[in-house]
Image (cartoon, rainbow, N blue to C red; front, side, top):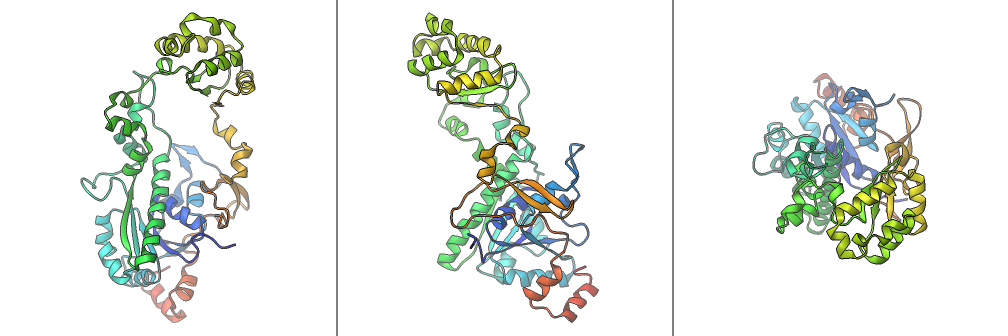
Length: 402
């Protein structure tokens, strides 16, 4: 079956996470992605065996999953001969993707001006920390940029420390925005015949993640920037509640019909007849008391009992699951949000995060996990770049390739 991006060739000159995951999305949907790495160690992600001193398994999930479906060529770009090889790749490619700074790329003779002069149809994509303009020199990490955006300050209970949304969420979202930008630039190039330069940054991606609350703040609602206690949420029917097991999120409109249904689901008539809560307006005015009253009921129930009651009366809800729960969710597996792939490193099939987008006629696939460093170097030199074997040997002698 044909793939959506079949025929598109991407030079993947990225390391760590945001850049590689952008290229991974393109590779999943059929692009030929060639990962260009330094022969001395390659992408630093190849060495990740633990996170925060905790082992992540018996195979390098960090590198192998975000570099799946890719080829690898090892080139020493400090050598003139190495740059010659890359420039020849640029001639034959549609996209050059890097998450190194534009200043560093320029020092390496890999600026947009340099590469677009070689191939005017080239899409030149960068994944930066803070965008192309303003102060772009400071280091960027997922958590430091998230702290900068204001999103972290809004999460958590008032008076408690801000909450980091999770490892790599901004990187992952920035990567998918980068892939989307590349797809749009390819579409425009196919109409005009001209490439262009684009950037997707951690900062821009995480500001976008803050919507709609950030937009509300821009419109003048200053309250949306503040931490808000779940015990003081204005609509008590749209809130998080404890049980003896899992927490449960309830999402209902504040009207009399849905309140009556919730009371039935909770199995508590005293809540239904409490005059403090018998109209929508009173429930808004007495929101703190309402939440406390619901807390008192749910905190005595098991999560399974509460979930059963909510389901019986068609209350919109969800348990707060952990990773152990979600990896067993058949809904996720049926939609290929989780998939299986063969891992050569451990000689067995392993579970991997799958595809966030479903296409009916040109679906994505996970064919291979990340490549060994430089495993495709000689094949690409011959088949793609047209070098003869004696030329390849000369490049090896010069130290341009291993």
